[in-house]
Image (tube, rainbow, N blue to C red; front, side, top):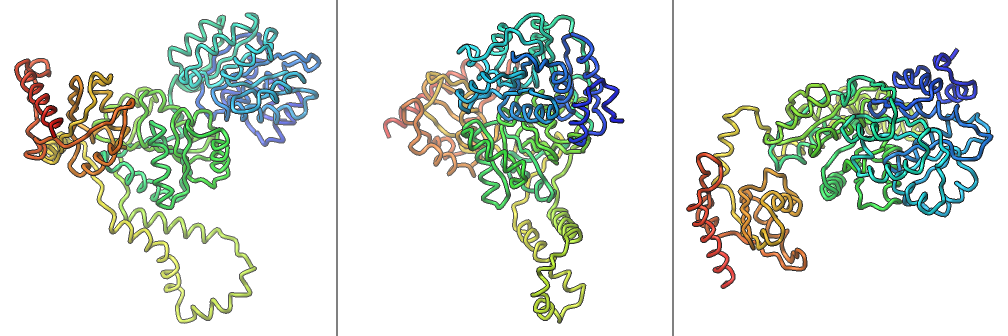
Amino acid sequence: MSNFSPLGLNESLLNAIQDLGFETPSEVQEQCIPILLNQKTDLVALAQTGTGKTAAFGFPMIQLINTGNRITQGLILSPTRELCLQITNELKQYSKYEENLNVVAIYGGASITDQASKINRGAHIIVATPGRMKDMINRNIIDISQIQYCVLDEADEMLNMGFYEDITEILSYSPKAKSTWLFSATMPKEVSQIARKFMSQPVEITIGKKNVSTKNVTHSYYIVGARDRYNALKRLVDAHPDVFAVIFCRTKRDTQRIAEKLIEDGYNAAALHGDLSQNQRDLVMKSFRNKQVQMLVATDVAARGIDVDNITHVINYQLPDETEIYTHRSGRTGRAGKTGQSFVILTKSELRKIKAIEKVIGQQFTSEKLPTSEEICESQILYLAEKVKNTEVNHNIDFILPKILEKLSDFDKDELIKKFFSVEFSRFYDYYKQAPSLLQIEQTKGSEKSSSKKSHGEEHRYFINLGAKDGFTWMSLKDFLKAELNMGRDDIGKVDVMKTFSFFNTHKSKERQVLKAFENFEYNGRVVSVEITRESKESGTKNRRKPHKDKGSFSKKRGQKNQNRNKSLERRRRRG
């Protein structure tokens, strides 16, 4: 007897489950399925990504649908096209022995005419992204006025992507008497609002604790200098030869840049972000699922809804702006009972974020040192040895074997092994022998103090003809510069914004990068001018300002003096 039998599923579903090789229901399936089959109720289920939520709502919905009636009876809303297609495919597999059950996927980036044609032929269950669903309801192509079951899958992600208004409008066309089932990995206040607005006394099921990360994932962080992020990433990847990872960046630009650098350095990598066409996204995801791509570099929005088995690592090249998003990132690995690792590369100034994330996920991070060149070489060689050990002999090589043996006849077994593995060993050993050393910052107050003292005389101060009139504050200008210069937040300092111009500091080593980035650069149709100030050329530290004793702001007299001096600088610059 199947372990799913006690849940109350019918024979046709149990046969499909057996074909799929499912042996034991997951915790979320065990708790949800009997309730949804036997009670007409609303339900809120909190469970991590990868815990079998699709089957938890899919099996009951399939069993409850009346296939003798052609009207749409079930609606499933999901945040992304990838997840929409994935749910649709899974429901079709679950319902392979159900007669005449039609499941239709509705999503953007595909022909609306083809989708309308499928709807007209009868769709018992519609799986849809909110944007395309709303569009088709407004065109009177889809009627959900008689649905009995509505699922909001990955509700927190849909709301993070700004679909609240779309969801509200879609549900306004549905009957109040329906059963609404909400599935989410986390429970932010926006999800609670949806539950209060569209549900009546829902049954609540929580697998683990709210917002907590799965226990199958370990969490580690590495503190490096801001300029060493990329080299730190390469060390982590090289130390794990079997890596099959998602690497998260905050911006589309960083995502593309890091993917390109990895490809240039010989890694199997690809970028996934919002600037790709749907066809490009499909090709990237196909390559990643087939493991032709070893590392997928992605933004948080583009990665939503990705469900790929056996991801070994999640690498946070940059931490997300919102703490809760880290839960979704780390949930990409350690799925279906497997273990996974989540690495964070950060600078010392970002360390406070780790404490905030620990509170959200309910787990502790371990502080780690980056692997040494010796450790990397050892990992690579042992991985190769394991591959050789497990490789099946291809006897098609037999015809050339005598010639190989003749060439190697002068060497004994130990010499042959050394020569064979030296090919791979030398590649990594020679690279890391010449590679720049990485600044791994210790967590001590003294080291922070001394490094900050040391850096003052090593900075250039720059003038830029953008200011408050262009809508910049010191914070937004810093973000703008960080993006345009491909620098970390710690690489840009002492940003002062005036009315029509501003000043900022970077390390002297960044001079060429700064000046080159702003060659022939325009902002809102105006040529942007950036140059090193005279003070920086003369002393490097003359522009330092002393904070006010109490408030941390500049004294009025000193502030006026500095402003006058900056205006004088601008006049001199204009005179040439």
